[in-house]
Image (cartoon, rainbow, N blue to C red; front, top):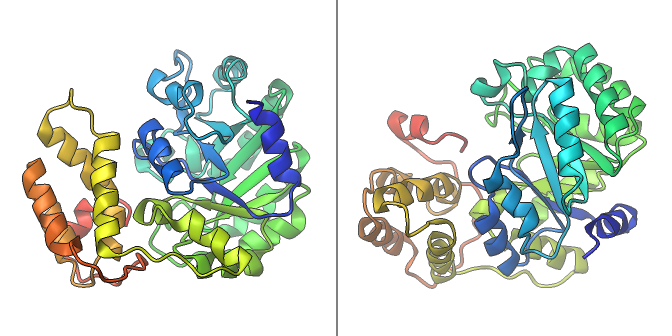
Length: 349
């Protein structure tokens, strides 16, 4: 397959581009494979390759590229700030069947931004300028960037946009929050619309797209070329399919509780290796349940119980108690009344 030509066609097409967001230790190869069963995205971004002076390509992430099961273009994402190391990594990545290379300028994790990587680089626009200049010269295929609006304040975004424009990006993905806002605030879609108006390349809107209706609203409000979706697609694997149905004016598929339960079972089988002890498998599933759980029921009891499960049988007993029914589930985020300990355990609700 010529993924690079496929990506060109997506960029030059008329339909909104649907991208699966990269989420570390979540959107891995097994998850890509499962997402494809439910309709899938148009393009998949890898988890980020950590890049530094002595780094090598992470083989777990590289498998998403070499064994890409989706039939759709894959984009390799990097994170780091060491220009020689980033250039070296770009040259290595271009030997593999990728459609583009992406630089992460948006990761809000403190362990990342304290090292002046990911979203931390947004504190230093001049340094971003130097990195993009070196990478644009080294990347012989499509070069893309995923960014937030700034570190502390979105006011710096007006300074960042001319830098992005200067380096001939092929695609810019904008998460409409600052690094410090994490996932807690409303998304500033007006800033994404500003990027669409100012940038010479296509722009994807990212942030809080949780339904087909919301997707339509965000596309209309921002004028974006498409959407990048992460948490919403984990919670609702039918979301990309539903968005396409909405675009075509079709009746949307709405899963029932038993459909969602089947998804959880399929997810367990897909992402949990039998070589790993059961407690670790259940722990990995809790990462996904943090996203799914906010769409299950409004009391917070599902998440409260699931986070305390220690074994597979207990985990699925809880899932069955809440999901073994035939009622429609829209899987949109509900305002939960969680205990403080649950909120702290939730990472990124």
